[in-house]
Length: 378
Image (cartoon, rainbow, N blue to C red; front, side, top):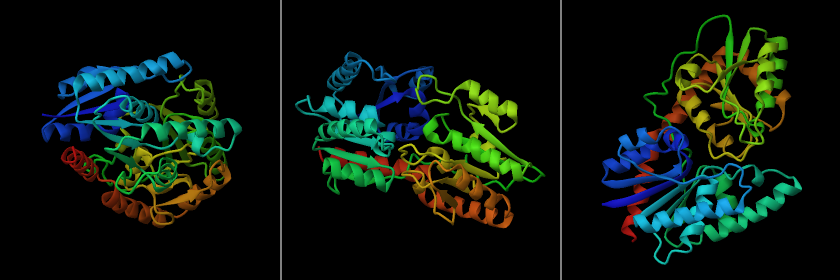
């Protein structure tokens, strides 16, 4: 039986971003394994036929001993399982798996999914430039494996990393995000009623543009008091760049936003929204939440930032604004809030774009084709 090992940071991310691919692989005869840090989803995944292996990925990366231990654990697991393909997803799993593969005499095929290069590749601080140099050197080493495919989600990341690593056209491919199930994320009519809703859903990190969202909400509400701003998502206290819960509570107390916390009913929440926004300045792949918003037929206002701009067609399915610019964000939101006809038309075009670019069935097919090609080449 063909054997594939997925390596990701944590189980819930795998479920939200890669589970349909794994299930289709099982259906196609693959023995599917998953290595990650588990929260409370292990039993669910094993019930679906996925063999689970515990590997701890630290959030901080402050202990070299712990990071080296993660690399050794990946190496040991790959050698023990004798997998045909190892598919690593996001920065740390890609780097650590790639490094582990360099120490194996007959390594399996390697699928490296670049879900955004991260903030260090867009920031201009001295610390970010030094980190970018170190991470670039790690990518060069980790992606030296001959039998590989590197999956990018946007053209900017593909251009940057292809130059750093010297990837050929045969080594790389572009798949815009992890897709959306169009039967779940349906195109519902815009809600009726006196009040309108602007939604933002994400981990509540500074780089996701949470403060710009709040500042834009203040500007809009000073002129449009009938607009509600929904902030969907939890703080992430293990991340040093997380917004604090006290700040969220204060915004709610002031009446600026409605904080909904983590929610599993995103399709329903977007159906009740008029506009979806995400003013991120993080090094995104293609944000899944923007894919889902487009699938729900909602116009999007987002930043002219790698990954975010790849989720829309500017002026057609949404509007782009500069990063870290709450005034421009508020202006774009008010433009759509004031023009229902254009808002609805833009949402309809967003749905058509999602059908063309983001259908999860197409994403699954592309991945299975990559696996098959790598298997034939072995």
